[in-house]
Amino acid sequence: MNCMTRSRLLTAFTFAGIAFAQPAATPPAIDVASIKPSDPGLTPMNNHFCADRFTLIGYAAESLIQDAFRVKDYQVFGAPEWTRSERWTLEVKTTGPSNYGQKLELLQPLLADRFQSGVAILERRTTSAESVI
View 1 (cartoon, rainbow, N blue to C red):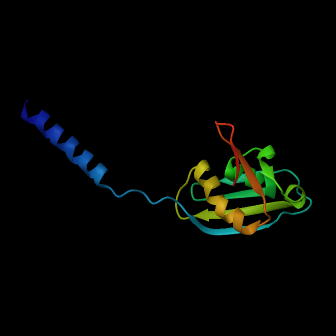
View 2: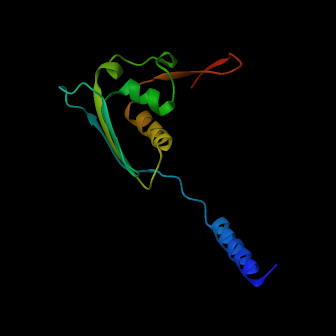
C-alpha cells in the first residue's frame, strides 16, 4: 500500500468514526399547535406541508383521527355525528424537520386531548383477534 492509499483510508476511517460518534437525533415534537373550526363555507380539504410545520384545512375530526392513527373508517366506533360533519383547521409547528409519517404520529396525543369523545379504534390483528384501543 502506498502512502497516498494509506492516507485516504485513514481519512475515510476518521470520517466514519465521526459519523458514528454523532448523538442520535432527537425526534421532532410539537412546538405550537392550533385546532380551530374551519370556515363553514369551506368544504374541500386542503393541506400544506413544510419541513417543520404543516396545516390541515377543512378536515372532519373523524378523518383526522383515521389519518393520525392509520385506521380505516370501519375501525372507528362510537364517534358522534359532529366528528363527521364539523370541519377543523390544524396549524402545527414542530421542533424540527419531520416527514409525513412523523407528522401524523405527532397528531395522536393532540387529537386525543382535543376531541375527547370516547371514540374507540378497533384493530384487526393477523390472528383475527380483535381488541378495543
